[in-house]
Amino acid sequence: MLIPIRCISCGKPVGHLWEDYQKRIKKGENPKKVLDNLGVERYCCRSLFITHRDLVKKVGQFKR
Image (cartoon, rainbow, N blue to C red; front, side, top):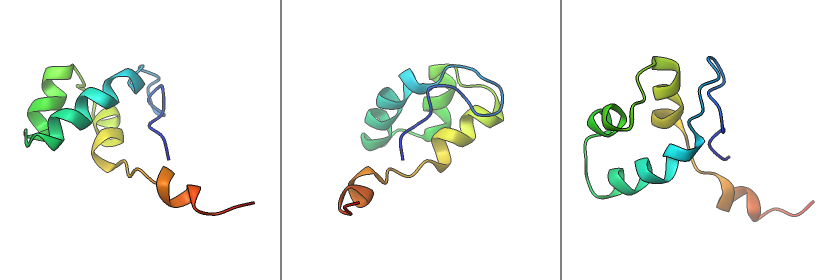
């Protein structure tokens, strides 16, 4: 749903980098270079960014 504030595996704060990552990817930059530039080095943290799917709009359609 939303990007975690901290990496699930190692605990490094990564939530603040999500908006910059999204903007740069939409501009057409290479995801590897963007993550390198943002300082995301560990594979566990990188996997959060690469595999994340934004499902907020889909889940928001359903009522309780």
